[in-house]
Image (cartoon, rainbow, N blue to C red; front, side, top):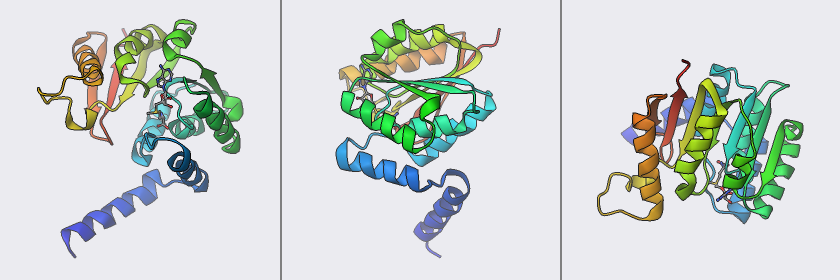
Length: 214
Ligand SMILES: C[S@@+](CC[C@H](N)C(=O)[O-])C[C@H]1O[C@@H](n2cnc3c(N)ncnc32)[C@H](O)[C@@H]1O
C-alpha cells in the first residue's frame, strides 16, 4: 500500500466515524459552491464544534459570520432541544439562504439569524453564552473578542477560524489589514490571563480559548 493510499484510507476511516456529512450537509455545501464563496468550515471543524457543544453542555451559542449556515447547522444540531444559536450575518443574500437551510435542517426554531453588521448586533446582545464562534471579517476579530469576553460565561469557549491566514500569520513580509488583525487577536488570546488558549490545525487554523472559571 502506498503512503498516499494509506493516508486516503485513514481519512475515509475517520471521516466515516466522526465527521460524515448527511445528504443535507452535502447539499448545503453544494449550494455554497454554486452561489457563494467556498469559505465555510470543513466537516472536521464542524464535528469539532459539535463535540465542544457537548463538552461545555452549551445551550446558548453565538456565531459571528453565518454564510449559508453550514457551521451553524453543525452547531444547532448539537444543541439540546431547548438550546439556541444566534448567528450574525451582514449579507442579506447569505442570511436568507441560511434561514432556508436551517429550516430544511429542522433547526429553524433553534436559530436566529441577525441581519446586519456584527459590530452593531453584538453591542445589542447580552450574555451569558456558553460558546462564541468567530468566522467573519478578519479586521473585526479584536473587537469581536472584546464582545465575546463580555458575553461568554466563566468556563465557556471562544473559537475563531482562519488563524493561520493561509500561512501568512508568521510571515514578516505579510502585513495587510487582515493579517495584522489576526496577529492582534492571537497575541491577545495567548496573553490574556482570563483565557487558556491553543490553535488547532484544522483547515486554516481554528483557535480555541477557554474562559477562566474563576
Ligand atoms: C467565512 S464566512 C462564514 C462561514 C460560516 N461560519 C460557515 O463555516 O459555514 C464569513 C461570513 O461573514 C459575513 N460577514 C463579513 N463581514 C461581516 C460583518 N461585519 N458582520 C457580519 N457578517 C459579516 C460574510 O458575509 C460571510 O457570509
